[in-house]
Image 1 (cartoon, rainbow, N blue to C red):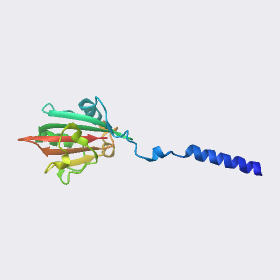
Image 2: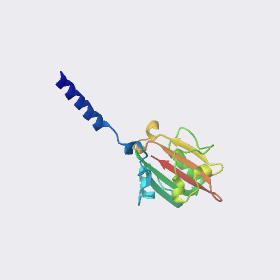
Image 3: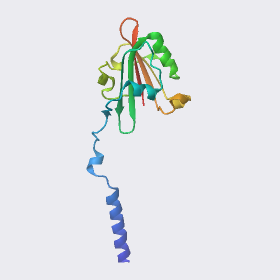
Image 4: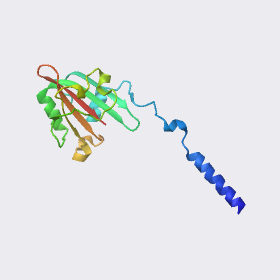
Length: 164
């Protein structure tokens, strides 16, 4: 009986030690998030499966690597009509609407690209979509997308697209 108890205690002890997490794994993993070097507009366009308008200017893109996903950013200037067309192509159940301008992207986001955050633009309009939820097979690998459209100068608007 003593031998069985000793063996059982030793086995439980080894399992406990083997399954225990060290202090480092409970802390913050400072490797994330980070910006993927060399990734930009082509990677964002490909992941989002969007067509960059020929009229787009001042185009910027980046990829932020997070612990469980990559977040693709794409921004450019275009006409209001083109921005509306892009928003329609996302197949969101909700139209572009002015509001609080919130977005799910935390951290430096578009500021990394040298742009004003969409939340800081007065009158920015926004909508979001879960492509698989609305049956958009073109973007079945995308969990979610957001678009923000804010007035820039003259007849140009800045489009901000985020996808993950």
